[in-house]
Image (cartoon, rainbow, N blue to C red):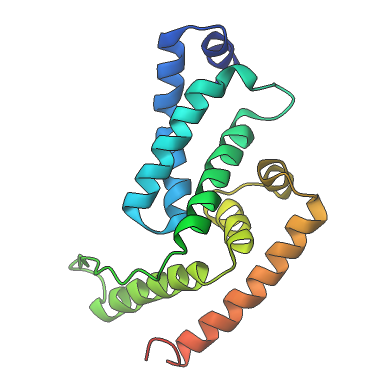
Length: 181
């Protein structure tokens, strides 16, 4: 994010603010989708986050990274939405496209693996899910996660450790066919 664009948006430059929102909208949606795992909820959360960023840009202080500030807004909205809705596991059918030169069996198994991982992440408690999404899907550092979620660094490390243990157990069950089979 260009600091000049952020400052211009904060000073009331509407074009700069719109440009800034367009630059971050994909990132905001992707984060919301990974946390909520539902397209409509993610679209709603992303829209709410963009509106909040639009109205609160003046309160952004440069002591935090802009992407961390954005992430905190998106994550908090998703957690609030999650608490209100208590999501169910999505059983959406996904179209699989097979490429001629690839082994069809490998592609099918890969698609199942992706779905198993998504389902396992969905089963994590919301605070564990948030740190997993930020660390492994958004590539945030531990410090960025701590800033985004307003948590102590050791809490982030603890959540990630516990989340990895839970994912390992859940994915082991999937591999044995215990959950999906």
